[in-house]
Image (cartoon, rainbow, N blue to C red; front, side):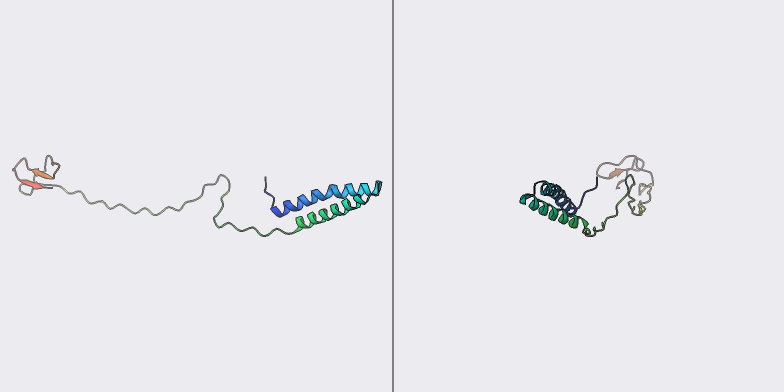
Length: 123
C-alpha cells in the first residue's frame, strides 16, 4: 500500500473531523435552533474547508534517487575488472653444476648432494 504524504493525511483528518460536525450542527440547527448547533455547524465548516484546502495543496517534488533503482527480479549488472594475466616464471631445469645430472632429492635447507659425482650445491 502506498504511503500517504503527511500534509495530505493532516488534511484528511481535518476533513473527517469537520464533516460530522458540519452535518450534526446543520441538523440540530434545523430541528432545534440551538445556539450550540450553529457553533458546531460553523466549526465543522471551518474544519472541512481547512481539510479540503490542505489536501488540495500541491505536494513538494520528490527528490530523485542518486542510486539507480532496479525492477523487481532484475539482477544489477556489476562491472567486472579486466583480468590481468598472471605472469608465471618459466620452469627451469635444475642440474648439478659439475656433471649436469638432475637432483634426486632436495633437503629442507636447500643443500643437495649429487648422487653421481658427489658434488654439494645449494638450490
